[in-house]
Length: 229
Image (tube, rainbow, N blue to C red):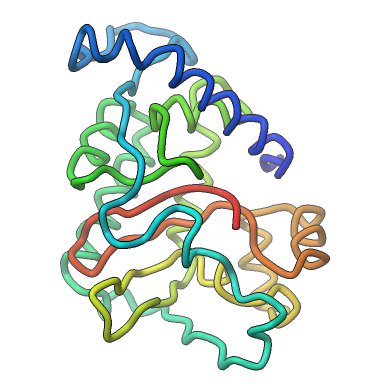
């Protein structure tokens, strides 16, 4: 069973609370030591905090919304599937994210997150420990369900936003940028790999995609992975 939208909102609030509680401790002790071997799922880990914003001229709540009803007449973005057409830096980061997510290993995911400066955004506020956010949103206590969703998202086609500007970025899944009512039957099958039919119907009623999206900049920097508009 996939994660519901309501659960994601609760998880975001929980993660924000965790950050406010742990921030003074993080400042006092600095970089966290590697996770202990043999630690059971859900005992914490992955943990380092990231600052707000993404330093790319894009904030979590700006320019990441799906086309609204007002933009219905605008041409739909081109959907891409040919991985050979991705810029080498983008393709390399995508493979690193896939490798870390597939491993289920917190240390590997932490290492990939740390490759981008500033780090990718995982919440609407740009605050909170990224892995705590993943764990809080996941149906299991280790964050593995969200990693599986991350893999499904990156297995779809993508669209390019901001072409011809310094803010060009590559967005997965492509249907995050396409009005739900315009998806054909083949595209709906792809969408149902990422979210439930019930969640999709809620998004259809709203008119926009509100589940997980992942963005990578043209320079290969991982920009964000988050749910919401």
